[in-house]
Length: 239
Length: 113
Image 1: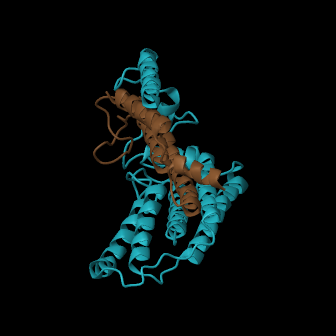
Image 2 (image 1 turned 60 degrees about the vertical axis):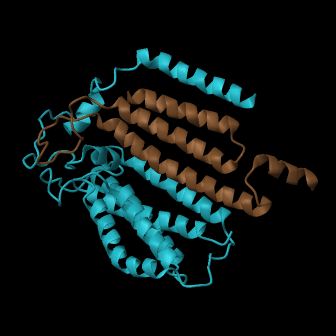
């Protein structure tokens, strides 16, 4: 009986959503809003020139990846809040799981695991660093890069029973978070706005371009990697 | 159509929340709804025949899908990870106390005290 009612409720909800399709734009046929156009042409302040890869320079935001330029430049304050949410949840996991012992199996981990970690770990860390250093040019950025690094740390936890990173991760996390705010305060001192892009933005598509965007994304990468490694360390406890 | 996929996933998630009595399955249902809403927001920005919003040597001038929903979903995914980790850690504590995740068995153990 309970299942039938649940089915009816969820079907009703789906029906409600399907009915509301008529007020939505047709799929694949959406008009770009004024805000999106301003973000894409990097002309929020109203300099209406088309951006061209490898040629346009000294734009108000030099990141080739438009999503990155929104997340880390135009809406950087939001991202600061988002990083704070992640920090709070990592802190909450640490508080809830406080007092457990580290999980041990009483024997060495599998030989294949131990050997392949030695081969794979440098590659995984290198790839993570690549992803967040190139966050303003390619898909990716600080959040995926940090997650990749945390995956590498998980391999270390699985393969080595004595491995412990909790102190290092707390150190990296707090310093990366503080430096993010310091970058914002320097912008406040130079440009008069918190987190303003105060460095020269360079040519679109260069590695050294986009002003503070790569710096902030590298800091976010370190912070997210440290936080997720901390969550992994907290969850990897004796139940 | 991608809209329908996200609606169906939301329906599956609601059904799971209403029927499942295992707390872990409950958490999985919440995550399904989370993912479905992300798919919906992303699909609102899709424009047929246009490219990823990244200036590169293959797309030197702007011919892009809407980048704004993608930026919003990036935020939503990270917060989803945070809530999932917090929920999972709460489940670890519940399992440590009751040695089960079934709601009815937990209620029986609570009543016996």
